[in-house]
Image (tube, rainbow, N blue to C red):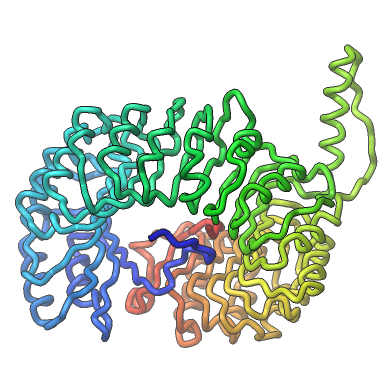
Length: 568
């Protein structure tokens, strides 16, 4: 059953290994796959290579059979490469696992695997026929429509099928053969989906709970989706949408998650189509990025979707046109993204100029830019945001230049409402180290789990302020990438008491290639304090496989030049 996910999707508890297949993968499987409770973990491998296949098979049999392990949950085996050769797929099909070995998830992405290769793998090796999740993302050049028949004939336990970015795979003849009774999640993002395809899917795959039909760029009639009586999550981003009311029954009473970001609405505006729904008592999560929404639209949205706990309004820059001094109905909202909505010092100036330019054009008069001088943006926007949503736990204002004053208003608003945030995302907001005392001392942030200050002018001065307090007892994610912090500041962070709970530490673009080894050495020296660390990004052009120290590999810590800054 679909459950609303409010927390960032960080793999706090799942170990992930990154090794070259021919030398390390089997050892990783046999020696590191299980903890003391026999919990199984995910393994991510780079190119499968048959070079040392016999030795690999021997190690697999010897090491796993010595474990005496009762496997309940299985594990995930993933292949991600663009350089597979045909004989390698043959070797994969021949790989023999112990009788108790349970493969749960198989990912073969960005490869040249063909339908024939898949047929061989599934028919020769029963371990692969018991998988529950198959991810074939981005194999468009090699996978043909008969892949669907192969999947249907061999994978009777499949509950999740990801076919994203395979534009040649959908065909009515073979799609009609796809009748997987256990399939609950289907991803057809960017697959050239047509109305007739959707009709077949809705008829044959009646147990679907999650469906992604984004980026198909065609006017698809959605009405057949009403046949999916169990559907709870629907993603239709970057599409042409004529009429959302075609699926009014499931929008009103069934769907819990709807993503219509960046879709082009024909005949009626996005807001008008939402109005046609009238009201929804089921939708809890709404992603509606880049739809030119204004403040009045927000009132309508919360009037329609009365059960919302999460909304993503990224890129709706018209929201910055006023101070958002409106009346929003009582709301349960806990998760709010206003990323890249132009809440900055020049937003009102830009909006006024655009309006005036359009007006002059209509009158046939010459447009001359007007010098407004310095006009601060509406600080009331920040105050009103907090006032509207007294239950917020997650807020993302990234890529809005709210600066220190805007952040001060935000904190004040939360203090007035006695709110405590769990997730604070402020990447590229024009902040300086002067806001750190508020973060490190305010009671608003005592329960913070994620803090993102990427691309702000924090410097070592900010680090000193941050580490002077230890109020974060449950901080799991920390992003201080591109914050102009030196090796000395980095070392202070590694010795900080609150770093002990951090699972994911992102510090890219503070590091240059010339001194990246020094940063790595600091991490090695402070491993005792990094008790829960699983992922760290340091930048500096480091190659993961070549330069991840053995000490970090033993702790199963993933090192990468860059992990990005989003938490969704």
